[in-house]
Length: 175
Image 1: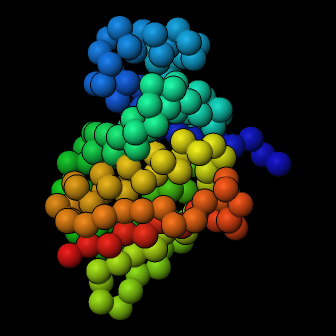
Image 2 (image 1 turned 120 degrees about the horizontal axis):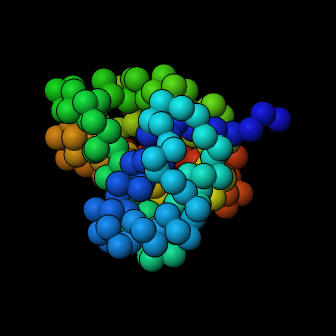
Image 3 (image 1 turned 90 degrees about the vertical axis):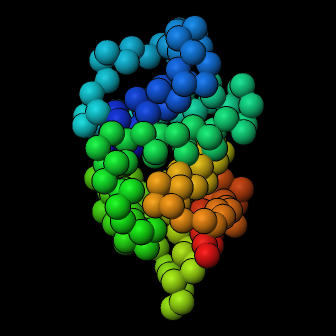
C-alpha cells in the first residue's frame, strides 16, 4: 500500500487556524508539540497524512468543536481559490469536489450525489478519514464551502467509516 499523502497547503491551513484561534503563542506551542516546521512546508508539495493528523489531534485536544471550525477556516482561507469560489454556487463547487480532492490527496475516493431539485447533496468519502477528527474537519469544510458560496443550509455527517460504516456520508441541505 502506498503512503497516504496530502498537499502542504492543507496542513498550512490548519496551522493558520491555530494561529487565528490561539495566537502566536498557541502556534508556537502547536509547532513545539507536533515537531512541525512550517517554513519547510510547501503548499503544493505532498506530505504524509500523519503530519496533518498531528495538527488535527493537537486542535482536538483543546476541544472537539475546534476541529470542525478548523476545517471551515481552512476552506475559506485557501488564497485566490477561496476568493474565486465566491463567484460560483454550491452546485458548481460540488461538481468539482472529486477533482479537487484527487489533486490534494493521493488516497481515498469521493462521490457526490445530488437530488433532482438541487436542494441537497450527499457526499460519499471512502477510505478518506482515518481518525475521528478528520470527519469532523470535513463537516466544517463543507460548511465553509456553503458559506463562501453564500448558500444557507446545513451539513451533517450521517455515516462514519471510523465508527464501522462502509464509508463516510455527509448530507448537505440548502434553501
